[in-house]
Image (cartoon, rainbow, N blue to C red; front, side):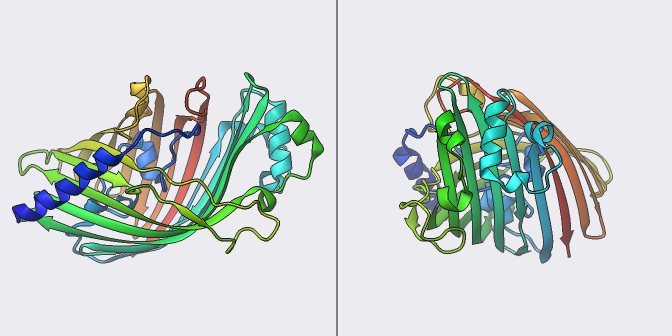
Length: 367
């Protein structure tokens, strides 16, 4: 038993040794961020024991006994800037040229819009699922008078396996994913925008990649079940090969999307029971521990979830050490609704912070 624990600890330690500081300018973007976690300040490394575990720590699916099928999971997020820029055109949010023009003409109003569809099957020690999502963000940089746009469309599948040891004290997990991604991350000058003709299908780079996630959870068998977690997301970085499969065609630029950089996250959680069927989860994360920068507070995430009878959920927290988050969830008979908001920094690394507040909603149908 202990040899297996040491083996997994060795994997995580090796990952830490080979993790390098990022030279990319853009913010580090994970494979996916779930709405439940974002309402809790995105502090989930030591929490996940349900569907969301596959995005944060694959060890969280260990020893799940009752099979569950998430038949429908539709999530959407929209930025405060999008709400103020939207003028009633139902096609505007799909028009890259219009997004760039509006963002350039409205400095201080970052644009953001995303949608996702996430069916999943979860059973004892095992989970498999599909991810289909699109996310577009844009912001104006007054320093160099350019408009930066990040846009990605993903279609992929994943499979995770977890095992519990020593009566559930140790949980270990590993996951693999295949992802077809179309992506652009580029700054446009005023001249380029005024020239017109910008279109996602001609600006995205598309590629096919395979990634691996690893995770450990240690739960102490005492009151409040204090849990320590470590996850290695995109072990060794998930790289892509230049493949025009779904989202683009011959007119797309050559080359593959940028790698999804490896991130090592550590977390702590505890459960406080207030009564029968009433409990509160408290969690704190330090994300991307190997990234070296002066702004250490940006790595910190903290939050809570108040659970009443597995029906009503109140959530709150702090994202990236600065931005408040909150959310409300209701689940009845396998159907769930979630609403909430969170703030984040959307500026490129090393540049002055650009705060963006996003609002999200989720519809869930599971059995």
